[in-house]
Length: 115
Image: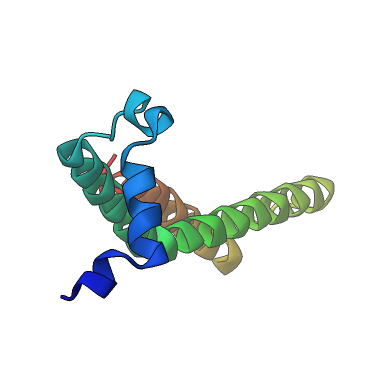
C-alpha cells in the first residue's frame, strides 16, 4: 500500500469512525451466541421443511375423518328411519376401516413430528 491509500477519503472516514465515542458505548454481541442462534434457526427451518408433508397429511386426514363422521351421521339417520336388515352392509365395514386408519394416523402424528 502506498501513502496515497492511507490518505484517501475512505481511510480518513474510517479513522474518524474509529474515534467516534458513540460507537464505543455500544458493545458488539458475543460471536458464540450469534453462532448458536444461527445454528438453532437453521435447525428450525430444516425441521419445518421436513414436517410440511406430515402436516399436510394430518390436515387431509382430519378432513377425511370429518367427512366420514358426517357420512356416518347421515347414514345412521337414514338407517333409523328404515328397516334394519340384520346383516352388516359393506358400507359400514368400509366406514369402520376408514375411521380406524384415520385414528391410527392421527395417533402416529406426534411420533412423526417428534413431539
